[in-house]
Image 1 (cartoon, one colour):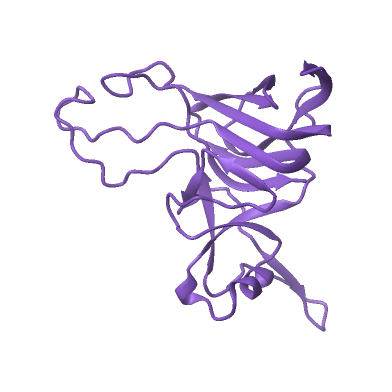
Image 2: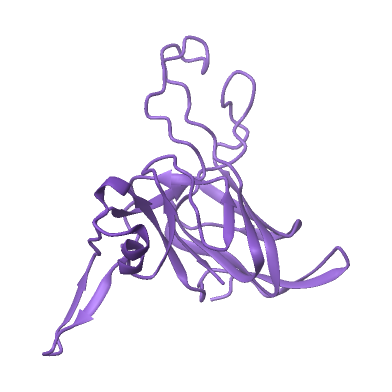
Length: 233
């Protein structure tokens, strides 16, 4: 469904008929990490065997993610998924008409997820920051997510999970704000559609910690977004 009606925007002399969408129609791209030592074929053959389209990385955690035709700043790989994210599956029908759905098993490839922050699982103890003596340093803050397209996109969406902390996501297209998305709890999609094409899309997440102390010199500004798939065309 469409979250809001089309919004007419004027930016750099052009009018954009952009809208926030929650039911993507573009092809889905899952995130796949590559372990070269476990590949039984060439990487190209392994990716062909993986169902659907994919973005790739060479690290299960904190790795950069590469997607065909676009660059996405502000995200890295995450090695676990919250409950509710759908797995990539393959459906086959045998000679007797029996339907079987399975998760893919391609040597050297695994489905992973994304987070708009770097995860620090070995945080040192702090004597001064945060002020509570002996607590670990806080995890790095979330970051805005920016999509830069090689060619204009007419649609881009993310499948995300909200544990209740996210309060809103501000969205910009080519530098112009188009509105705020209010997340619900659980798994959902959020994105934008623009028939005239988009080159730069920015998602700015806010959460319930905004304005609270982050360390001795700053406050929380951006929320965390945990994600599964991208949809774009």
